[in-house]
View 1 (cartoon, rainbow, N blue to C red):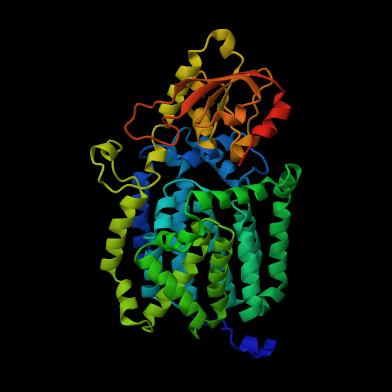
View 2: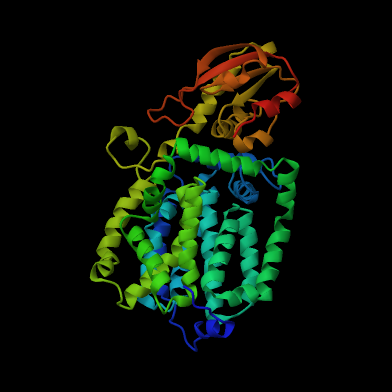
Length: 511
């Protein structure tokens, strides 16, 4: 710990570019990729849109350089895919499928850069393909799908630079970072933690390369428009971080379940075992010494996200190099016998048979109620019933007398509810919905001519004091045996708005 390492000494520990490197294991990695592709493609059009997908589609109708809860890439991507295939969940999910398939290949490529041959590359790829987080998020378009893929791409570029010293890779690292920053701001945390780890354990030469700082400049310049949007809107992303922390603490179990849930999303048993072993070998293996900072970065990010009450999958971007390191060490025969037994095809088969029905909607919708004991993904019910929600609300709205209906805006308590009404309610006669929840706040503000509000939600107390009268007039009823997040919520009518929307809307907005 107290030994001083000079620049000359540091360089001697770094690998020179080898004349040869193991061939890419194209056939086995392609087979693994194809198996995951089959599972994702066959389930991509089952059920319907996920709640977050509906929100991205709604945000895509109001394109901006930023949003309260995210950068602009996902709404832009959702709009593009909906333009290609209007109303098609399958088309919307094509980028998610491609991102996860690319993640399989990138994990194998990282193993190759670590010196792994065919076996190591296949183990690394297969571990990615049976990870709960990536199988599940490959099913729907979300920031949690695109962001880990971009992290894996960035890490492959950095690992390849360490082996080859081709500085052009560092410029591309800046471009990839810019794309990641437009998906989620988490990649900034990676660079801070990784920078500290590199200063401590190397390779410090990376931080002295002008190409790295040119790449950083590209990322910063690309981010300027969304930073301006955040600044002009009062930096809402900071408030969103606090809201997520509160949600994790009171809904997801907080720090108490952070580590167990993190291990679960890595995939049981294979992903968990190789994640732990990979971190250990990154920290201890002499052959992997130039990449040691990746082990410390993984641990550092886990500590940071634990401390701020972040979501467990925020660390998922670091899974690929850890699995790749574990696979290489297994191939070299340095692992204990039980570690080697974990990475055998019967274990991967069992893992796939467990993960797929828990992560993907493999069963027909009717089976969810006909066979309640069947394993099903936790988000399955949030892909069902959204058109029926819109029909129910539209029926309540249509029942209002015409003079009253013409001055009534539709307001949903949750951004999912508003997004569903935006997607399916327009053809049913509903006006453009609004919601004071999270990112929907800046998408739509009720028109000034709307003196009354049809409110869909459990808790209408946020309207109290702002309207003369408030009364329940119905309930959302989909008629389906499987209820989503909005099914069963009451519908309220608030009349006699007592102040302009320009002053009222900021008071209603919440995270």
